[in-house]
Figure 1 (cartoon, rainbow, N blue to C red):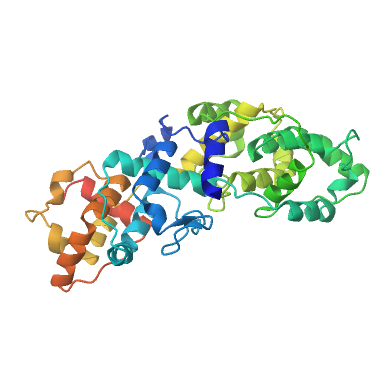
Figure 2: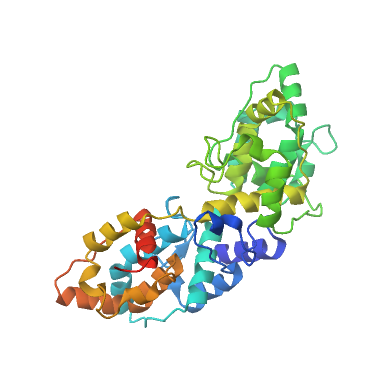
Length: 385
């Protein structure tokens, strides 16, 4: 299966991604830290038979949404919990029709499953080599990079680099020289959109023949956070500012898109660095991997919730009909313990029971979005008055 083979490859060689068992500083900014393990999450996805209804990149069940290509808005833990809640009745209905038993999930298993689902959202699907070849022509890459073994600028030797992070690192370090060459030859600056970088990489890989591949170990978000300051990134990308990479709404969804974004904005970045009188930071492959791990880690966590809005959600969504103080189950006993994992786990394990109670009480299933869940958690974690 395509997603299985890709997952094994990425887990074995590493893609400079998040090391899930290492804590991030993001929890200090008000997020909910989820120490799930990607590999264990894949096992949960399989053993709990999630693939019976859900596919990943087209492979697997067709009854539910493809979890590898969901809209990019479903990335953070609360957003995933909201997605599970909103589609709960449909999921349980399909399971009943197919006579699939509801398999309970514990907190650790749900954390691992969330880590896996987040991980695959940032992996790149295999690029299209044919499209990449067309891009080589359309972008004018051949003017400086002839596809001829041994020739100056031959990109075939780059095919040994197996993931977009290594490409981002090389393009970052060599951008000034490339820009000068393009100016000498009167070539326009080119940009890469969406998955174009992945397609280009796929094509160049076909040119490398049997050359031994060069891999990269997984990134460390803690080291990446230190590098973010040491390399001067924070001088321009100020937290909570207009260029805050951790909160930027259009931050790339995949590793390949990140490599493309870095190339597209490299001239602007270099200019800003020179204007501030800073030295141009050179990045080693592992440093780039750590920086990427840090940036993607900050994107995983939810913004802090608002307890006042959460109280309104609790009432508007009619949670108070079953979960008011003194009623069973009494959520006031969970003060300070509620997280997206808790919400998702509780919903999954007790969802059918909740749905039946709501049906008898003629209460409609209330849909909720990620932000509302964050606010609701903040309210519940302070204790129901």
